[in-house]
Structures are given as structure tokens and as C-alpha cells.
Amino acid sequence: MRIALVGDRSPGVRSHVRIPHLMRALLERDGVALDPYWMPTTDVTGVEGFDGIWMLPGSPYRDEAGAIEAARVAREREIPFLGTCGGFQHMLLEYARHVCGLDVAHAENEPGARDFLLTPLACSLAGHEGRVRLEPGSLIEQIMGAPTTLEAYICSYGLNEDYKQTLTAHGLAFTGHADDSADDSADDSAVRVAELPGHPFFLATMFQPELAGDGHRPHPVISAFAAAVARRRAGRALNGRTPQPAAPSA
Image (tube, rainbow, N blue to C red; front, side, top):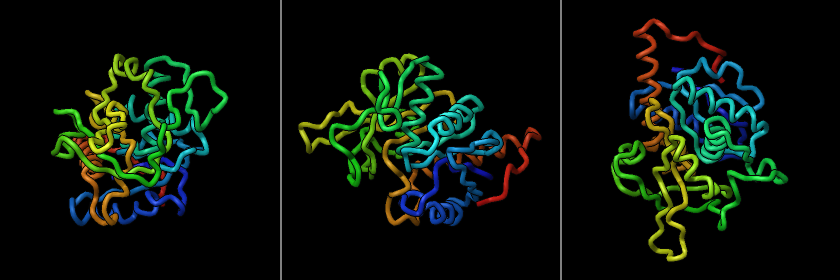
């Protein structure tokens, strides 16, 4: 089962370094064998041929358009998609532009733009942990099996809340929000998770599940993504539509 790891691979990004450990853990603990192939944002040609698409942290990406294209393909072709941190941000950007018809930008990528969908956080979450409140009955709540979860962040940009209602009206569900009861000044409406109801698996988190624990036990979100990839692969094989490998593993 081949998955595209969309992002500009770097040994300086902790989430990237943990990928090989997570692949082994998925095999040993969940019995799911994923064959990962790194795709730089500068060239996402053939991304539609993969069984799953995981857009990883590490923004600003080299090519915003490439990241947005990968998210669009996953959404439109119903390919299991997981976006984490930068992947979360660019999934929202793709949805705002192509589904909602908004002319909006990412402040990190286009600081001179007129309107921003992604803006600097009032307080950077880089290197912090925070509790996330999960919407009852949502995909993320079912995955975690609890109403809240404590997660790790390396992030300084989030959703401009002025656009939250518009994205919701066009079908996107915001199912995780900041929940720091120990801090009276915390904004408990700040979005941390988004998902697309009706899609086989389309989930994005502002936090980085790759950083959970020591990297040798897959976070429930990663396990759920792998399971969705396996279901799609099995379904395609049953229907005689198993895709041919797009490229050698890397």
C-alpha cells in the first residue's frame, strides 16, 4: 500500500525523522505495511496514483501550489488524506479557494496579500503541548475514544476565525478546538482539527501526531489513516482497479 508523503524532506524536521520509525510501528503493532514515497511540493505529479496522501509538517513549503494540488486531488478523488501542521494549513487553503471560492492567502507565504486565511497565532505554539476538545460523534473523537486529548505542536500559524463560518457553510467540519481550562485567557474556539464528512478519510490536525511518545508507537490518528489506506486498497483490488506503482520507494 503506497502512500505519498507530501512535503520537503529535511533532517531538521523532527516529524520527518520519525517517519521510518512510525512505518515500522504500524507494521509491528497494527499489522499494516505502508510503502512511503516522499514527494516534494515542487513536483506532485502522479499523486493521484497513491493509496493515501499524508501532507507533513515543514512549512513554509517550497511550492504552495504543489501542496494545494495534492490536497485537491485527495479531496476530489476520495483518496485517504492526513494533513498535519503545515498540511492542516494548506488543506484549509485549498478548500477555501476551490470549494468556497475565496481569494485568500497564507500570511507566511504571501505577507503582502490583501486577505489572509492563515494568520500568525497570538501566541506561538512552537514547542508546546495543549489540550484539544473534540466534538462528540466526530471522526477525530471516534479515533481518540475520548472527549479531549493532549497534543504536541510546532506551529505559529492558524485559521483566521473570520472565515470559519464560511468554510463550515460549505461542508467542512471543525471538530477539535483549543481547550486549556488552566488558562482563563485561552481562546477555546481556536480550531485545532478539521475533517470532511462524507469523504472516506479526510482529516487534518494543527498538532503533530508524529511527535507523540518516543516515535515507536503510532498515534491513533496515524493508525486510523493507515487503516483507511488499507480499506481503499482492498476495495480497489476487489474491483480490479489496483493502481500500478508510480515510482520506486524512497
